[in-house]
Amino acid sequence: MKRLIAKLVFMGSQGVGKSSIITRYIKGDYKMDSEATIGASFMYAKVMIRDYQITLKVWDTAGQERFRSLVPMYYRNADAVAIIFDVSDRESYEQVKYWINEVRKNTDTPVVYYVVGNKTDLAESRKVTYEEAKEFSNYVNAYYWETSAQANIGIQDLFTNVGRNLIEIVESEKPPSNLKLEVDPEDLQNTNKNNSNTSCCRI
Image 1 (cartoon, rainbow, N blue to C red):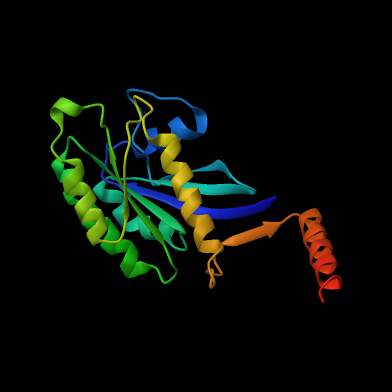
Image 2: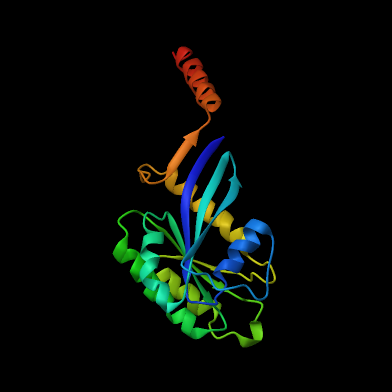
């Protein structure tokens, strides 16, 4: 079993559902009237993919204007960031570019970017189309995802996709040093055995 530890930071305007997405995935729970995050909160999320056990250190940052100066201390050294907006609130969508620019200005390590349109259950009130948000995400080199924390749509797949992309980075030719990969000693022994068996039989 390979163990990967990564930092995932949720950002976005107040009321877009950042906390609800995280709570829905980790606890399988949803509250209609959740309190606004003050500063930031922290939770662990587990993702299992192939022979990888991924532990995501998930930071949920506050969206209120008065806390914005604190956000950089939370996304520093992030491996992935998810910028959330409410598909029924165009102003929250317009803020996405601001958040992406902020992270890019203040980080010097590789970051996987996700733009996430939440509250897709509010289809009749929708102000931002899938096509528009997807086109923008492609433009800023981010993955686009849609979710509904209330209806539990797209949540599991979002975290799984983050895990897959982190694995892809770790398995690349030049993985960043900030991603921590641990391999069980048993797996290492088995690999060494296989390698020695292979080498002994070469002609």
